[in-house]
Amino acid sequence: MKQILLQRWQSAKVRFAALEPRERLAVSGLGVFFAGLFFVYGLWLPANHYYEDQLEDRDRQFELLQYMRSTEQEARTLGVDAGRLPSGQDLLTEVSKSAQNFQIKPNRLQPEGDSGVSVWFDEVSFNDLISWLQAQSEQGIKIRQLSIDRQDVSGLVDARVVLRGA
Image 1 (cartoon, rainbow, N blue to C red):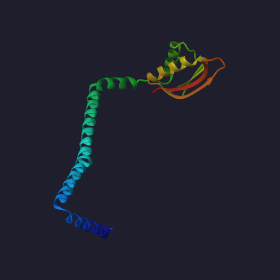
Image 2 (image 1 turned 45 degrees about the vertical axis):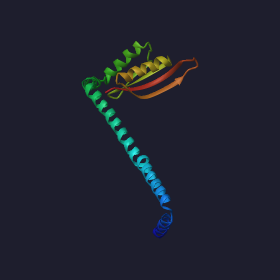
Image 3 (image 1 turned 120 degrees about the horizontal axis):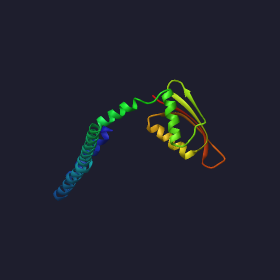
Image 4 (image 1 turned 120 degrees about the vertical axis):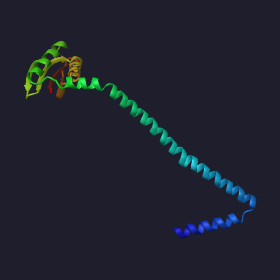
């Protein structure tokens, strides 16, 4: 391979030397032009674009850091409140009150271990059930298991939900 490249290089040098002086000047100028194009479009512009992208990324990260620092106290306060999730009987009471607020009536409530509760619903509005579940999630209560069966009447479902507090 090296031998072939050396032969081609020698051949190119011989052909270049055989050219008229004006032709050699034109070929040399063309070579310099293509070398310049390679430098600009092959090396400098990609490196410059990478540099600019990294600067923008750094600025975005800095803005995120500033935002996080400005909301740190609020996040810590919310974190403390989230640590006081209801558990056991408190969760049972909270779930019962919340269901009443959403005007859905659970057929059965049953404690599940120390920090969980199972809730059964018969013929409850699907939309009301989903709204209630979303409210539970927003309060930090985790949905551990959900089983929904549709009914013959459109929009009504039977459901069993297992919720877990702290």
